[in-house]
Image (tube, rainbow, N blue to C red):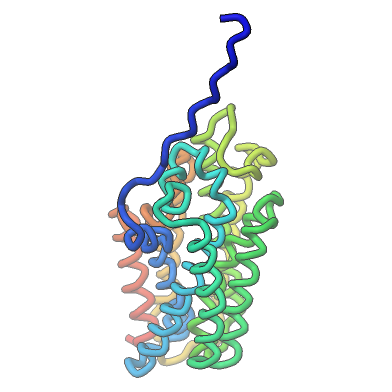
Length: 309
């Protein structure tokens, strides 16, 4: 009626999922993402270091990356809490949903982010400490502002994979070859840009999702992941087909033959990228049987190359 005082809008309902604090803390650490840390095995395996006595040190490095990355996830979700609450999927994240109080999330994130480099200093060598410390600093910078800069955001996310792959080698004092670094770097960029392309496809013409996505087009992201895929294949082929003098460990061309499953694996993953369904790389890698078969074939051929058969 005219002159009637308008009633105040009702406060938004609580978004808590009711799952409890401790389950919320575990989910906020994103345990599904911990599988990325198996990359700490990459450099030792590439160098043929299969000594059982070194497994303990590699497990420690993997655990340290779990702590570091979990701290980053807490801090990132704390900064993005309001945006996540408006997102149809991310609103169910523990911090956005209210299962984990925002102040507690920031404290837990800060403690884990500091604890990871400190524990690395106590348990590992200086190079590994610098690497994990650098990882934390770069990822926090990403959460604060780098994720809003087109292309830089892709490079920073890809660097996280590269740092994991380097960590095992640094912890064991293994020299990291140039081809290993180039192949890993472009392989990571391939996966990250394919993920962004899939996000752009899912968002459609109306946009949405990450703020930085408005600076990309689907065509540009397709170009990036295709270029990265080509560079990954070329770098691996140049390493595998290197005509340096043969050694006893390379009496048969197992290393050269490993190119076939490697290239087919890249092409298999590119199928998911082109369809725009590569938003969750970890799900594709662990669940696709075709990729699993190609990975086993590659591992078998590479293992034969190292064995000297």
